[in-house]
Structure formats: C-alpha cells, structure tokens
Image (cartoon, rainbow, N blue to C red; front, side, top):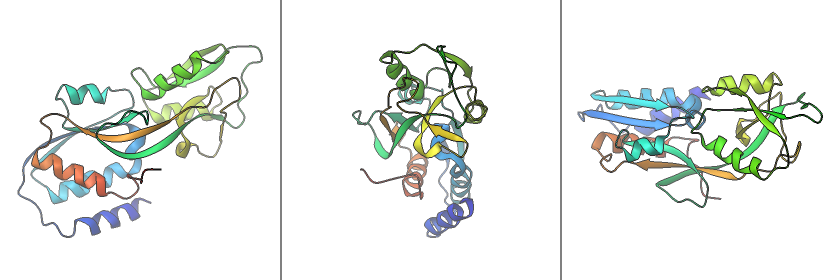
Amino acid sequence: MAEQILTTLDAMTQRFQPSPISGVVRFGAPDNFLGERLAPLLSQFARTFPSVRMEVCVSMHVDLRAAIKAGELDLAVVMSPPEVEEGTRLRRTQLVWAAAETFEPPKGGSLPLAFFPKPCVYRQVAGAALDLAPIDWHVVFTSASPQGIRAAVLAGLAATVITREDVEPGMKIVDGRYGLRPLPSVDFSLIWSENGHTPCACRFGQLILEMPGLVAPAP
C-alpha cells in the first residue's frame, strides 16, 4: 500500500519542478484519517516545495475546529455529522461499536468502554447513543493513541467506537449487542481558517484532494 501511494504521488507531481514558494503550512487532522498516507504526503510536498516549513498536528482529541477558528491552523481535516455541511467533504464513513471477538461483558454488570480523551467526536457520538441506551457503562481505558485503544480492545478489556474500515482481525462489530445502539456515519471535511489560503497552504490542500484513497465520491 505504501509503495502504491508513493508511486501515485510521484506521478501526480511529476509536472512540478521544485517550487520557489516559501512560507509555513499549519495543518491538523485526526489520526485515523491519514494513517500510513501521512509520511508519503509530507515527503512529496517537501520535495516539491523545499522552502515551505510544515507544522502538523495529528490527534484524535485536539479540537481542530477551534484551532482553525482561532487562526492557529491554516487548514484541517475535521469530523462532523453528515447533516453539518462545512468546508470540502472528503469522504463519509460509518461508525460502529467494536470489541474483541472473545469479548463478553460481566453479566448483569457495567459495560466497560475505551475512549479517547475529551474533546473527541467519537466520544461525543458514543455519549449521545449511550444516553438513549438502557445500560450501565463505565470508561475503563482512556488513551490519546489509536494504538492504545486498539490494544485495549484486542485484549478484551473494553468495547469502543471506531470506523467500520478500522475493524481488524480479532475484532467484531457489536452494534445492537449489550444494549448498544447503532451509531451514525460521520464526514471527514477539509476546512480553512480565515487567513489560511496562503499560496503554500493552497498547494498542500490541493495535494490532499488529489491523494488516492483520501477522497471518496458522495454516496
């Protein structure tokens, strides 16, 4: 996958010679949006625009939307419900409850859950669903790292909220089980700060829009 991404990116930017554009690009995104694409994306941009300095914040629990409004970032990928239209929609994904294949909560007990720290869209969506669920639950594991949440789930410690495409071997979708209500889909959208449309930031934003696998047509 990484080699395919690099090959495609190289083909996309063969028309560019190293650019004299200079400046700073301040970019933010949730961990689960870029994944293994982040390194080739940054590498390709650095080769094409060697005089541009990148400042990147990748996190599931940083309020990227607030950072955009405050002018602390030029552009960012944010998650929002489908009914909220903002920026340029990149793709839509389905959220699900997931747990280890061997996971069984204590009978008659409180359901253990694993979450990212607040603020987090996953946690907000889960909280809204849990408010309507006739079950007792508690947070047994909190981690700012997707790898930490993954480890807790695979160890059978807790259930959590992830995207359907992030469900991996050793996990099962548990929507409708243990009293858990199905979850909505969310959109990944590219948004900009008021003064974020600098020449170098616009070039980086265009590279995101052209990168294979990051953008999907509207359903």
